[in-house]
Length: 149
Image 1 (cartoon, one colour):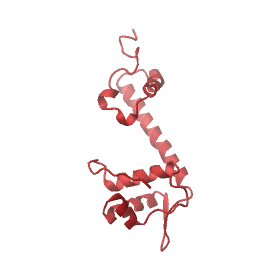
Image 2 (image 1 turned 45 degrees about the vertical axis):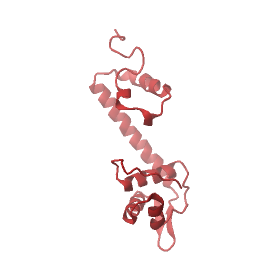
Image 3 (image 1 turned 135 degrees about the horizontal axis):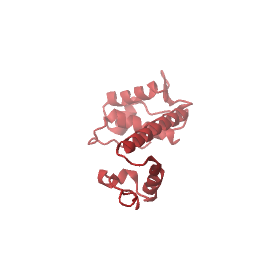
Image 4 (image 1 turned 45 degrees about the horizontal axis):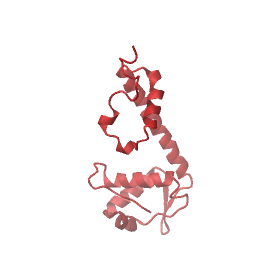
Protein backbone atom coordinates (compact mmCIF):
# COMPACT_ATOMS: atom_id res chain seq x y z
CA UNK A 1 0.00 0.00 0.00
CA UNK A 2 1.50 3.28 -1.12
CA UNK A 3 0.34 6.48 0.55
CA UNK A 4 2.06 9.83 0.22
CA UNK A 5 1.04 12.70 2.47
CA UNK A 6 2.21 16.23 1.82
CA UNK A 7 2.90 18.22 4.97
CA UNK A 8 2.94 21.46 2.94
CA UNK A 9 -0.54 20.77 1.53
CA UNK A 10 -3.26 22.86 3.23
CA UNK A 11 -5.53 19.80 3.27
CA UNK A 12 -5.34 18.18 6.73
CA UNK A 13 -3.26 15.02 6.90
CA UNK A 14 -6.19 12.86 8.02
CA UNK A 15 -8.20 14.07 5.00
CA UNK A 16 -5.30 13.34 2.63
CA UNK A 17 -5.20 9.85 4.11
CA UNK A 18 -8.97 9.43 3.71
CA UNK A 19 -8.79 10.67 0.10
CA UNK A 20 -5.98 8.30 -0.83
CA UNK A 21 -7.60 5.27 0.81
CA UNK A 22 -10.91 6.16 -0.84
CA UNK A 23 -9.14 6.41 -4.21
CA UNK A 24 -7.49 3.01 -3.71
CA UNK A 25 -10.89 1.52 -2.94
CA UNK A 26 -12.46 3.16 -6.01
CA UNK A 27 -9.68 1.88 -8.29
CA UNK A 28 -9.88 -1.63 -6.85
CA UNK A 29 -6.39 -1.50 -5.36
CA UNK A 30 -8.04 -2.20 -2.02
CA UNK A 31 -10.69 -4.81 -2.75
CA UNK A 32 -13.82 -5.56 -0.73
CA UNK A 33 -12.90 -7.67 2.29
CA UNK A 34 -9.26 -6.53 2.22
CA UNK A 35 -7.78 -5.95 5.64
CA UNK A 36 -6.36 -2.49 6.26
CA UNK A 37 -3.26 -1.94 8.36
CA UNK A 38 -3.95 -1.33 12.04
CA UNK A 39 -4.13 2.28 13.18
CA UNK A 40 -0.63 1.92 14.62
CA UNK A 41 0.72 0.42 11.37
CA UNK A 42 -1.01 3.09 9.29
CA UNK A 43 0.49 5.81 11.49
CA UNK A 44 3.98 4.35 11.10
CA UNK A 45 3.52 3.83 7.34
CA UNK A 46 2.39 7.42 6.77
CA UNK A 47 4.51 9.00 9.52
CA UNK A 48 1.57 10.61 11.26
CA UNK A 49 0.29 10.61 14.82
CA UNK A 50 -1.90 7.62 15.72
CA UNK A 51 -4.81 9.98 16.37
CA UNK A 52 -4.54 11.22 12.78
CA UNK A 53 -4.63 7.67 11.42
CA UNK A 54 -7.52 6.78 13.74
CA UNK A 55 -9.49 9.82 12.59
CA UNK A 56 -9.05 8.80 8.94
CA UNK A 57 -10.35 5.30 9.72
CA UNK A 58 -13.30 6.80 11.63
CA UNK A 59 -14.23 8.94 8.61
CA UNK A 60 -14.04 5.94 6.27
CA UNK A 61 -16.14 3.93 8.70
CA UNK A 62 -18.74 6.71 8.99
CA UNK A 63 -18.90 6.80 5.18
CA UNK A 64 -19.54 3.04 5.14
CA UNK A 65 -16.34 2.25 3.25
CA UNK A 66 -14.72 0.14 5.97
CA UNK A 67 -15.91 -2.01 8.84
CA UNK A 68 -13.98 -2.46 12.05
CA UNK A 69 -14.35 -5.81 13.79
CA UNK A 70 -13.14 -5.75 17.38
CA UNK A 71 -10.14 -7.99 17.79
CA UNK A 72 -9.94 -8.78 14.05
CA UNK A 73 -9.16 -5.48 12.35
CA UNK A 74 -10.56 -3.06 9.81
CA UNK A 75 -11.75 -4.34 6.45
CA UNK A 76 -12.94 -2.75 3.20
CA UNK A 77 -16.75 -2.99 3.11
CA UNK A 78 -18.28 -5.29 0.51
CA UNK A 79 -20.15 -2.40 -1.16
CA UNK A 80 -17.38 0.18 -0.71
CA UNK A 81 -16.45 0.41 -4.37
CA UNK A 82 -20.04 1.09 -5.39
CA UNK A 83 -20.38 3.70 -2.64
CA UNK A 84 -17.26 5.55 -3.81
CA UNK A 85 -18.42 5.49 -7.42
CA UNK A 86 -21.83 6.84 -6.45
CA UNK A 87 -20.18 9.61 -4.42
CA UNK A 88 -17.84 10.37 -7.32
CA UNK A 89 -20.77 10.67 -9.73
CA UNK A 90 -22.54 13.07 -7.36
CA UNK A 91 -19.42 15.20 -6.88
CA UNK A 92 -18.77 15.31 -10.62
CA UNK A 93 -22.37 16.35 -11.33
CA UNK A 94 -22.10 19.16 -8.77
CA UNK A 95 -18.85 20.33 -10.34
CA UNK A 96 -20.38 20.33 -13.82
CA UNK A 97 -23.48 22.18 -12.58
CA UNK A 98 -21.28 24.84 -10.97
CA UNK A 99 -19.20 25.16 -14.15
CA UNK A 100 -22.34 25.64 -16.25
CA UNK A 101 -23.70 28.29 -13.84
CA UNK A 102 -20.39 30.16 -13.77
CA UNK A 103 -20.02 30.03 -17.56
CA UNK A 104 -23.55 31.37 -17.96
CA UNK A 105 -22.77 34.09 -15.42
CA UNK A 106 -19.78 35.12 -17.55
CA UNK A 107 -22.04 35.33 -20.61
CA UNK A 108 -20.50 32.32 -22.34
CA UNK A 109 -22.82 30.49 -24.72
CA UNK A 110 -23.68 27.25 -22.93
CA UNK A 111 -23.83 25.34 -26.22
CA UNK A 112 -20.07 25.91 -26.69
CA UNK A 113 -19.15 24.15 -23.43
CA UNK A 114 -18.98 20.57 -24.79
CA UNK A 115 -16.65 21.66 -27.60
CA UNK A 116 -14.48 23.68 -25.23
CA UNK A 117 -14.28 20.81 -22.74
CA UNK A 118 -13.27 18.39 -25.50
CA UNK A 119 -10.62 20.85 -26.69
CA UNK A 120 -9.14 20.96 -23.16
CA UNK A 121 -9.13 17.17 -23.03
CA UNK A 122 -7.50 16.99 -26.45
CA UNK A 123 -4.62 19.15 -25.24
CA UNK A 124 -3.42 15.94 -23.62
CA UNK A 125 -2.08 17.71 -20.57
CA UNK A 126 -2.25 16.22 -17.13
CA UNK A 127 -4.97 18.25 -15.32
CA UNK A 128 -2.73 18.28 -12.25
CA UNK A 129 -0.19 20.31 -14.26
CA UNK A 130 -2.64 23.03 -15.26
CA UNK A 131 -2.20 26.35 -13.48
CA UNK A 132 -4.93 28.99 -13.16
CA UNK A 133 -3.36 30.96 -16.03
CA UNK A 134 -3.71 27.87 -18.24
CA UNK A 135 -7.46 27.86 -17.67
CA UNK A 136 -8.07 31.50 -18.58
CA UNK A 137 -9.02 32.76 -22.01
CA UNK A 138 -10.36 30.92 -25.05
CA UNK A 139 -9.63 27.19 -25.06
CA UNK A 140 -9.75 26.81 -28.83
CA UNK A 141 -9.54 29.02 -31.91
CA UNK A 142 -12.93 30.49 -32.69
CA UNK A 143 -14.02 30.76 -29.06
CA UNK A 144 -13.25 34.44 -28.56
CA UNK A 145 -16.03 36.98 -29.05
CA UNK A 146 -14.14 38.42 -31.99
CA UNK A 147 -14.06 35.03 -33.72
CA UNK A 148 -17.80 34.54 -33.17
CA UNK A 149 -18.76 37.72 -35.09
